[in-house]
Length: 479
Image (cartoon, rainbow, N blue to C red; front, side):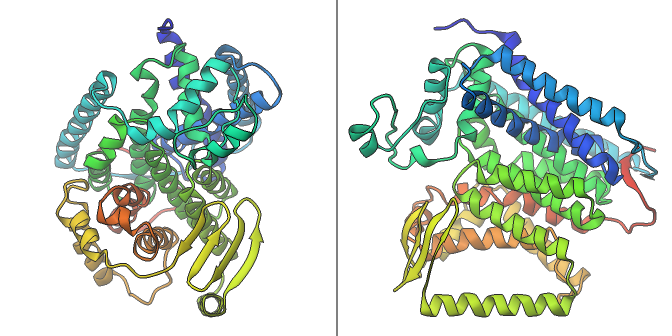
């Protein structure tokens, strides 16, 4: 067993967060719509992603992976962000709107905060004790990080066929497809391993505890920016952080799903603010988070495409009639393509074709398109199993309330359509492809549902927002 460095681990956990906060603050300060919770939430994921990019760049330049040298490089990136903020002429503290918070809201909020804190403490305890190991994580993700840790470089992983007949210096995994998975998640593990000086410690998986905490902070901050009162915003965080299935992915650390869910949620939040402010900082943040989605897991490519599609929709800002015409034309093109078939090549994805009920996506393989009766599996997942607590029961009255409060025919908002599209993606995959088996045996259905759930909670609690009676940033003051 290699010596464990507590100092290195703490730096590995804190430094990316500081880096991300500095640059998110730098991006958003000109928008005049930000708060400390948005900076902390968005900053953690941006900083973690930038750290993985720096590791890749360092390896591409041919340098041996060294934690302290990489840490100095990240400190330099932090310094660049601080210098840029100092030279910027934009005021960091714009005019604010203060919302009074009743005392009974504070009392209930204190109770919710205590429950959240207690839950996170127990999750940390479970993670450090590691009574169970995440099977898929140790089959697909962790071995890459361990091999890279020992080699000090990002050695190549290939599928089993190429491993037998190809480069003897390459590595392979039990899952034939794992070699083609994005490498951001193993790099997150590798960074904490480098900091701790060992891979043989459960503490290297602490980012899987910090990730939902940062997600909760970001959710709270964006809801407050959207003029949602203190108690409903905190209730949304409690609902999110107490979800049993989200907690499972914290203690069984190593999966990519919790990161993909968080990145998609933060992208949707940035999309919402981009529509309100039309500020380049939120637009750029949205694009970076879409990139992160695509670089976490293969389904993230679809989620990234959804984010980009609706980001383009916001930036074009078409009139309702013209946008409706565009959607109708797009629907006609898609239906015609499904009837007559299509075949073309797309960068990164490869060859895409549809013919005789078979769809081919070069990166993901071939799928037969056919309807499968999995409705009961969805209903049991939503309303019988305990993975989602009361979420889906709350969604039904929340949806009814939204129809009552707002006109159905109004122009769909920026945050709702990406969530609906993500849910539709999950539905199509498990109803019309061979993955329906994974819905019937409940193996991956819940994991796929995790992706849009945090963003769904954001949309649900936006219905509590108060009318905007002032211009400027919405910050938190207690009176």
